Length: 191
Ligand SMILES: [Zn+2]
Image (tube, rainbow, N blue to C red):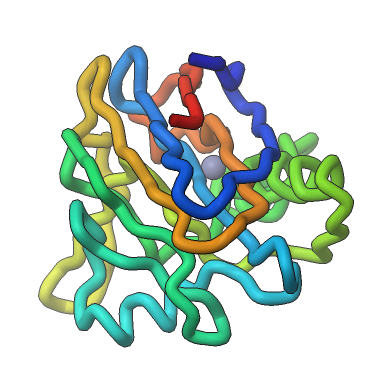
């Protein structure tokens, strides 16, 4: 098991058939997951396509996640938490500037993921919606959304199986509101 330090990210290759286990070791910590097809890195994990084909916004065990070109990329095969978000973009410098009013903002999950993919040889200008593991976003009837503390408790985990060879970026999220006010590490291993 490896550890992603608070407010950091990593990049790695996940081969077809391999499984990625993402653990929230202390509880209430979000981890942003994003991936590209290794054979065509301009093809990326698509929230929109996945929500469209699955007809739901909350992803769970058994759900296949699709690419921007509608290929099945990966599948959630285990999940002890049961609540994740696939609607919101990764936190970024602009997130902290606009929402938090930070004068010298952290680069957030967006910056950490761009660095992670750069380490794999792919230069991303910006990022679309990531799969925000353990993030608890609640929809209201009037269409507004609430970002609530994650439901994950210490040791909760998700296992994602690669259905193609993937380039993966993974973070320990940097946004206070998403993580109930504190920054914690994320653990992961490739099985
Ligand atoms: Zn984040």
